[in-house]
Image (cartoon, rainbow, N blue to C red; front, side):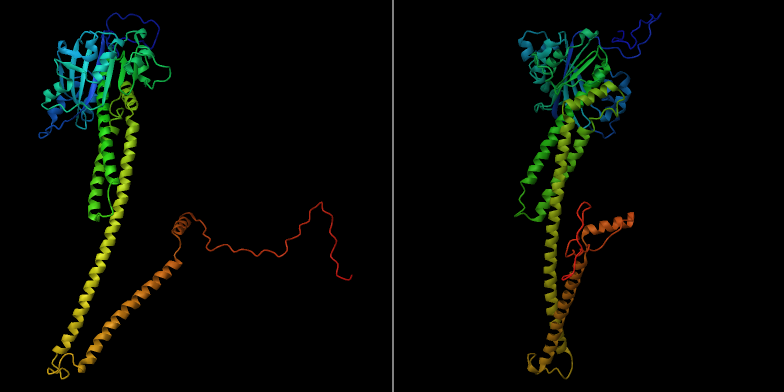
Length: 507
């Protein structure tokens, strides 16, 4: 197909004698409408990488199943950071049924394709692509059926079909999903009007008040007169673009749906741990149990922050990986239209505050554990000191009675008054020990009082540091107050009459 669109130079160009290759990929030429719906699932892909997984990664590269044109090398180079295709299968359209579409007597689609993707985070996503020989606005009921998965092939739903292909059981589609509407627009008259675009985006064939919709129109997608791109939180409408632009938008929608699903899961877990932190009881809980709970919350908070960055914040940036204006413009606009950037920032702040609160509580637990350790150390020292004192006293006494000297008479009792000087000496030693302890304690308290009396405020250290580094002058002491004069000075005005000089009394 010859390249469509409007050339940059409106002047008529001479017809070349021989066919020349187009300077860019041709625009799409399909006559009907293509509808693609991306669904989030609760399944996770965990490949066996015992042999490195290079063959499997190569088979899952985006360019193996999608026409990415000149961007194929860029997408394959960063295949591990982009959605990859697990399975692609064509479905029998004669078995297609949809609740609203079939009730209106509309014909089945001409082509139906079931996709299974895996995101870099391991999430598995489903996508269903339908090609219809129908005008744009006529597809609105089918868009509604696709969004709510009110479709089946031979009585089997989309999730059941996908589950049977990968050998698992259906567990219900997640609420996150996005729809893509592609159509050709060879001329500027074929570009949908703003009213038609809002009817497709809101999936309602109804008029709207001007200026009240919140649709996003990226500049790069609407640069040419025959191309358009309008985005909403749940539906994207692109007309007149090349195949590789449509396929790049397809991959961006898959990644955005995966990020939205993972962001909701992270928020639910963050709120769960926040409630667990708020519902804790510290009154009758031992410090060890409090520390165990806080460590569990801290570990979960670290995992959630890492997953938030890996699955939501990093995938929002496609321009670093893909050097193309239109795909990256659509990707950024899609994340903005779905509100993923702002919501990720709010969840990130929640996780940071949870981490700060947990760290503060851990500090409190450490302080309580230190106080308990100090009390335990004091009890141990008292017990050991008491035992040492008793054993030392008995040791002195038994050592005296065990010596072979004339002062020790084996015929007398050890409690005889003749041994009173010995007991008195032992008592003097004990009393001297207690007095020495009291004197040292009094000396320490006096030194502590002196240090507190001359200690400057904390902010004085900052001023002295600035003075030493920047040469600032420090003025110590308080300014003295000058004594006020008893009589205020008599200041004469220039226009006042001269005062008479004072005369002595009697003159």
